[in-house]
Image (cartoon, helix red, strand yellow):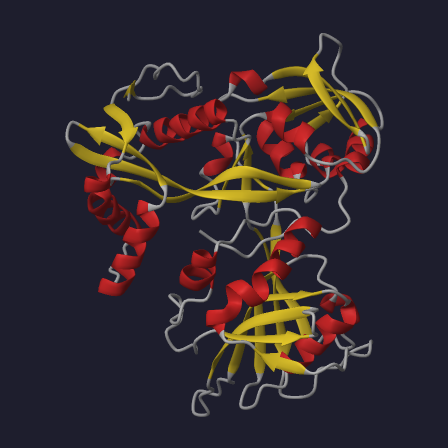
Length: 428
């Protein structure tokens, strides 16, 4: 248990206790007996009134999480839960707790409670050898100050499907088949795991996650949508799409909808076959795919970009480098780099300072250095670049990183480069 007398304006994580402030809270494990209290606090904060089935499901999820609570006396005033995930990184994967149910009572906002809970999680990660943490932000402005940077991006794609999908390439003509969602963990799981090796930013999925989160019968955001459908191509599997449908409304001039949750394919031709199928579902006139990767080949092989539109780009998964050295030395590198980095990290002092990065296809070393820096940047911006989803040169142009040696940003970008952009659609 850590007793925290608030958090000062600069924060800081030393795993020995808190710093000056005003609101006394105890940061400790939330026992199973208090899980219902934690849920009630989360429902209060997120203005939620789930039915009995959803409440039971949330309870099971929370029971399976690492749970950190903030207590004012005997009253639970803050909750931070973390799913026990691993995250794919270039060349491998790393343990990465995934933050969820993060809530602070309205009576205790702006009093250091969230800071204290995040500091506790960072301390635990450092002690347990977990170099990363990840989350999806409900409010964009909150988590940057804790060192989380947007490491993946998503784009919403819409297809007008009241006419055949115009393509510049020939689709794979092998037969398509429907898969029962109950069989998804066995039928799709190994294929999905292969996509994690090829593209960074993807979380691990257990059979339970497939069934109880990714392929739930009723969509929480739109109860009019059908249960999930899965269409697959190839034997052995060469690609699949997960989608739901909703009928149209003629009076409201609202076309029937195909909402795509996920589409994976070995080749552009397989992807073209799956998109052609989705755009041809009877009694629908619109395909909407939320959270596609920015390098989705559909945006190139679509013959009519008035028919296929990229509607909105947004930051998706946010990553925190808890242990910069461990994270950098665990990933693969596309080119050689020999640079001194000056990293700012106000919450994890061990990450802050000057370090010589010597990286390349044969491996990586990252050691303290007393030499002048080639690049200076904040840990949140290094996190944004870590999976290959952001460019250091862009950060320099935006004034978020400082290039002390000409060409240093370009050198680091070349070393961090990945064949595919990082991407995930798994929210939590």
